[in-house]
Image 1 (cartoon, rainbow, N blue to C red):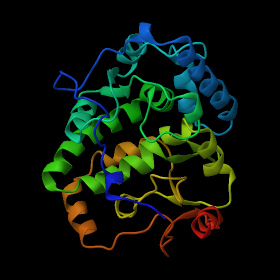
Image 2 (image 1 turned 45 degrees about the vertical axis):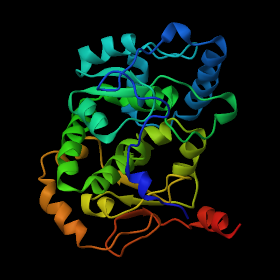
Image 3 (image 1 turned 60 degrees about the horizontal axis):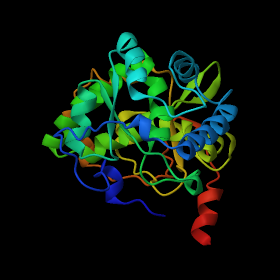
Length: 293
């Protein structure tokens, strides 16, 4: 099992620091090659075939309403034109992962920083650093939803405060288990809304179809105590009743919660507690076999 302290950071971009203080760069859309557009098409078509019946309605609607298609990598300006009218967000290009304070500042001002590069064909199923497919296909459709739009802005504002309070790792876990790897209840079923799932062919199937992972009702304290996997599928997925439940978190003062969580032991990714609301108690078989090999 590998869960590192670095997993609780947004990290730094690979390569040289951009000249701009906010790390934004030109997307360079005209410089994408036919091979790069083809990689997008492969990823897009494979994922859109898989998501019906697994992705939440809000994700599907966002995809329909945005200028996102299979033929080419989307132009961030065209995406922003639609987002600005719907929820006041825009997509800005960055060279990769950016420093925490830069990331939070963008989110707090309704700017979503998206990597402008795309993975190589041999990296279709795994990439350490989020690329344009993860950031645009996975995240941007949900920014069309008012609840997610407001929650992510509040997360950016909260991130700046968590840095000052020394509790960034606790807040980062909330983002990980919601915006990246969250599930919700919809018409009596579990559906995905997290970008890390929506942009991953393998994890889309694993999180909903496999018996191995736990699926547990989300509470703030529980999530903030729980470490996560950055090297493999998640051992536990947390479930909210709907997207409006995330907005309720934005009305809570996190400072006392941070102090309380700080006094409690951390939980491992696969732990199940006696007071958890358990939708599925996972077998743990997948990660047990990986650890044994």
